[in-house]
Image (cartoon, rainbow, N blue to C red; front, side, top):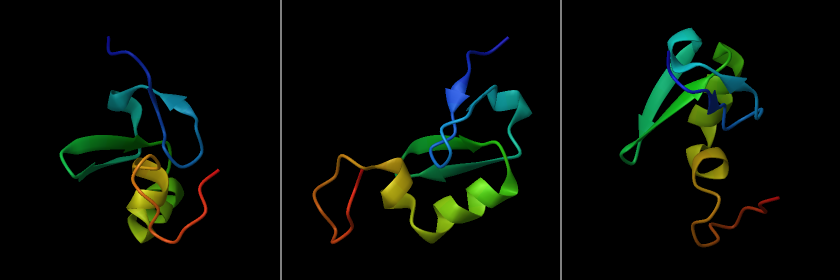
Length: 61
């Protein structure tokens, strides 16, 4: 049984095998609780997946 991972969009903790979707981005795999979160990630993966990168003009919280 795998450890839980955090959906980068909503923060929900899910097991990878239960994820509604997953996405590979810049060598890292992200898991999503729903297609809605997956679609939000695809629109702006750096906002959700890599907030520690240097500013790309977006405000990170």
